[in-house]
Image (cartoon, rainbow over all chains, first blue to last red):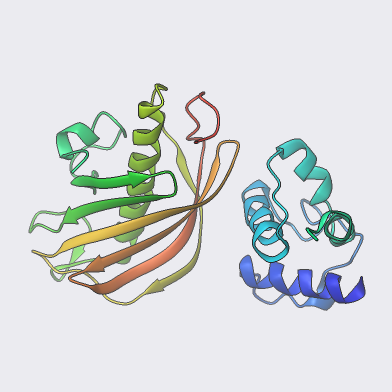
Length: 85
Length: 146
C-alpha cells in the first residue's frame, strides 16, 4: 500500500505540474482539496484521469468521486478495492 | 467540412476579431478538427506571427465548437463555457501571416460540465503548439456526450 501511495503522489505531482511539491510534502490522510494540498474542482478532473489511465478505474459520478479523491489514503484504498483483475 | 465561419457563429458567442476558428472539418465523440487562416488583420499578431495566447484561445474555441456541434446533433442547444485551466503547454513556433493552422482537439475526459481537452496546432505538418486545457460550464442540459 505504501508503494501505491508513493506512486500516486508522483502521478499527481507530474500530471498537475505541482512545481516545488515533493511526495514527502503530501500527507497521506490530509485533504487534497482546499486547506490540504490546495487543489480545486478543475484539478479533480486530472485526478479522475489518473485513476482511469494508470489504474483502469473510471469515476463517472461526481458525488462519489468527491469521497474517493479526498486524500491519498482514500484514493489508494479505492484502487486496492476496485482494481480490475 | 462540417461548419464554415458563418455557421460557427451560431455555436459559440465569439465574433470578429475574437473569433479564431474558420472551419470545423470533422467531429467525432472524442476528436475535433478545425482550421484557422492567419490574415494580416488577425488580432494578436506580433511581427507578422500569431502569438501563443491566440493559439490557446483558438484551441479553446475549437473545443467549444466541436462539443457544441455534437450537442446540437443530439438536439440540445449549445451553451457558453469558460477556459478553466491550461497545462503541459509546449510552444514550438508561431504561425505566420498566410499560414493555415490545422488543429486537432482530443476530448480526454468529461465529468459533469467539465471537459479535459488536449489540443495540437499544426501548420503544413509542423507542430506549432500543444497543451491540455479544461473547459467548464459547457454542458448543454442534455447529459453526457455519447
